[in-house]
Length: 408
Image 1 (spheres, helix red, strand yellow):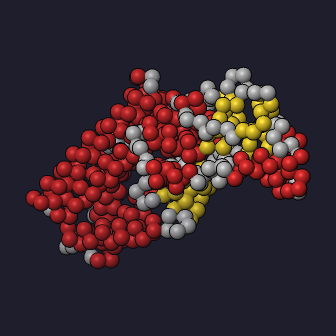
Image 2: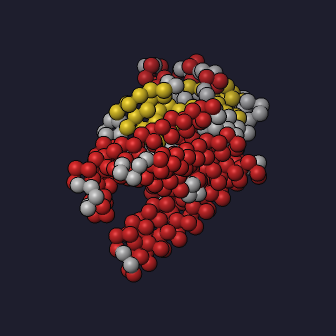
């Protein structure tokens, strides 16, 4: 469903998801029900609904206010934000560029919890100033204060993408000087904590409360899977940064002598194994002399094939997008993604062609590094398609690495 824009600030659209309003109603109903049960002798049904509705409204207003200030701090720390979408108790930021310093990330992470606690204290103080006969207002202020206090504690939990997790990661980064140490520690801590939550949920499921047990075990399981995915993502990042094109197994170049005629070229074409191959590289006296495309056969009458040489159609090799064998793997992937042919030519320091790499070669290399050996029938299936095996999105991973400042 399409999100609705509520306002625009600093060029950033602030939006709410449509189901936000449904949750607003359910939250209001939940609070009014609690008021009816706990204070039915003080407030009638209409007043209980008023408390529920105003509590929800003011809570969401404080969340929006906190996010505006959080955005202001993030922008001042170099973060580039495309849009912000509210999902009831929080917001999801679509970020084009993250903060590149540990101290900046600490400042960003601490904003929301501090604002939640500050709001709670201010509201409690205001409610204290009201007269005892203004119980309806006092009740609303106390509930909004309590919920803000709860959100502050929730945001400080050091797991995953919560502010507490970002804070823990950034503090380790600040004192160790290594961004990766912070990420690694947070991921391991999240895995341990999630496992404990899952086990606690299982115990509750069979001993105390089925509802809370199921909820805890489900949340724990989700966090465990998220932690494992993050760990796998981290491994792929390291492979892309530490590996070079020379580590890959190149696809050999199909070659033919420049003085060969089109009859000989046709025989080579008929015996090719990969249907994706359409180029042949020319040699002359043992040296590379250019390249040709197979379709030159269609441009010449069959009667003239025996007296037409392939060298007459040669193109310079430098027309291909190429990378040196010493190039980092992530840079090679970036070059690969801008080609029309779906492969890049690998050359050495003397500009001599060594072979070809495509998405298949890179994908299998990454999987092998991860310890995942694909079965031969699956490999043969992907060999006929110029795509990364199993849909692994290496270009997207590189974009995320750039956004986080891990690579330039």
